[in-house]
Image (cartoon, rainbow, N blue to C red):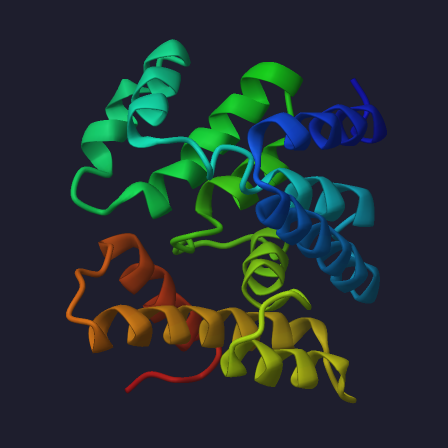
Length: 203
């Protein structure tokens, strides 16, 4: 199945699987991801759009539905792996597994969706684009998102800036959790440390 056909079928699923608000977010995320992909070589806009469209496809499942879906996909280990970290994180890898099983999505799309919530210690460019788009698509109204959007639309936004922006996304997420005395997933800490190293921050 080609990318355009996958995208068409994933789009048709959103009506049944997501609330109107979540669907709107997914579409806006997809549009922003495709726009960012157009700025850089190495990421096809169609793949970026598909990743944005499908990244939250299982986000609205209840905890019971999440468990049953994971068992049905043979991904029961995910439940143990993310025990204690909340439904906010498990929807990402489970959604990636679902889309791979149903549509055989390409590896870079799978990887981007799998790690869009936590980040990855070795992120590909599509993952960076999805992390940024998910955090600051136009429907995100919090000040941090607006600040990042203004930087993206400004001059000098290069491919190197993707890592800086993704680092800022993770920083905001970590600050949000720490300021509310919530636990932080180790994967996010590892991803943030990696982005600090490659963007020149070592202390």
